[in-house]
Image 1: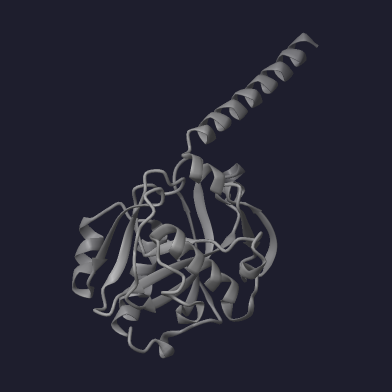
Image 2 (image 1 turned 120 degrees about the vertical axis):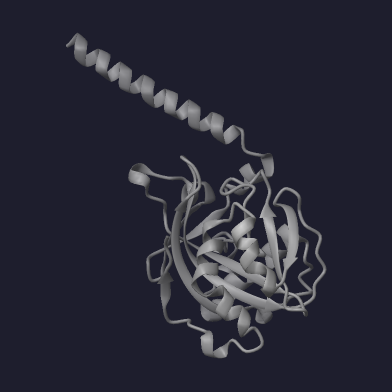
Length: 246
């Protein structure tokens, strides 16, 4: 009996330590990033059908057995009139993949914003993309309209960031070519740079680390899309969701 009581007390103590460690780790996150963890992402199944919603914290926390909830996201590739691609380095404050180079902008439509949950023609995700371009890079909403985001395809990937956080997303890929005004938010972005088609392969080999979604999209079809930037109609695939993995 005494042994059973001791075992229960040990289990309670272990759970208390785990809760304290988790609370301490969350407390170390930068204030704006911590507030963002309360935003609500759209949970989806493998066919990208909405099945619920959950906080950003829940959607990016690695669960028992290494599972991460699948949720909806987007990745934007912004090119200027010279055909150069805008890349960013994520700030050291980011919860997942801090200090990693990545494509122009990556984030999520939010369940608590009704206009971002609309499905037709991916208009909800487009609106979320415009919102995040403004927040992360200071691009005025007047500079890019939702209709100017060219919806190419969706990809599905999963990648841990560290022992606690990770990504598991169905990612909407958007291209847009336009000259815009840029004023990066230092809480989100520590560096930006325009990279030409002739420079990108060397960039990917020599500059790092890279976010997994950017690296996977680059390896899959980014160069082919880039080479056809003036006319992407034949390369568009809105019917299939391609699984990308290492």
